[in-house]
Length: 79
Image (cartoon, rainbow, N blue to C red):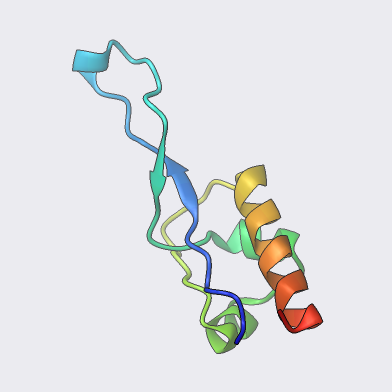
């Protein structure tokens, strides 16, 4: 059985009550097009693999690129 489709991690919004300090990460809606491009995937290929895409996101986080690369390697190795 292939590995479970990963979910992206995104930064939580900074709130006034938190004095602008970043409070960590949360699970996001989908990977940005830049993150897909960094792993060598197109949006169409990602859809075929069942990878969620969020076209509104413009950021490219290295940790999400790493998550995608690990997922693609696990698919290729058949784990």
